[in-house]
Image 1: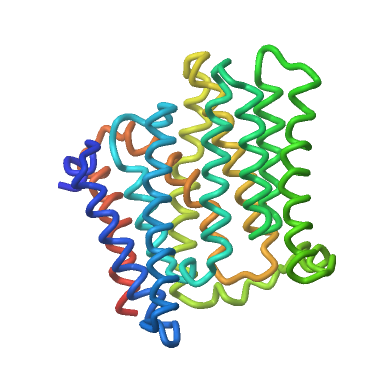
Image 2: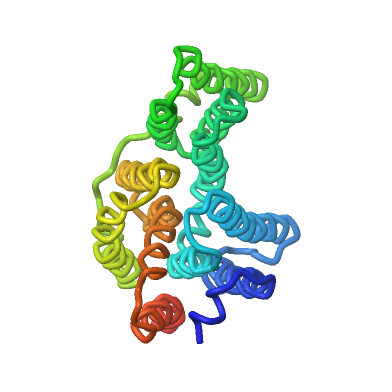
Length: 307
């Protein structure tokens, strides 16, 4: 049933995803926020619900535009379910903001396989990465992906490697100017660079440990398939497939470097993981097994709601 419903990209699917995110935000975040129905708080919450819904549309656009999966909505289904499985993400708004900006940067990175508007795409990606870093410093690690994408191009020159630094400095100078006008201080720069925490005590909570364990299981199950599949991909498909794997590795490093381990940092991994798991599901021949995987993803957030 789930495979047939989400196996095609239809408008009704996104209505369902939007409704699920709305309910996940209400039951996962609003119940934990004081004065959540106050006018100002209500506007803020509505904005972040809309921001989360925008993320699923953006991810779907990236996947379809660059043929990262077949024409289905499995990726968005996985992304939505993983997101509401960890409602703590909704409470960490910096991570919510940073992730969508990184998705915007990733959209430009995967499109670099085309030879059109290369310099503009590199500049756009560097701008979005730096904006994301204003909310979550370790987002700067996405520059690794940007330089890798530049190296992957058949025709690379020194100018392309200079553009990311221009994009970074443009946003950084604007941020410095803003803080000088508002705070009359440079102290924010010292606060911007966080310490790295390796305290995973928050994962002792079943509501964080279970989703993390399920995502790890999906990753361990599907990653070997993806690695073996790369060799058989066409010359056109291979660069983005490799980029996706490196994106997952960088996102795992970003989550690991989080200054505070609350479970929200796993949001960085969800988008690339969803694409990789979708690639695996698409190639599963056994219909019952495929259906069972999707039901597992759908039922976990419902079960966690009652724990």
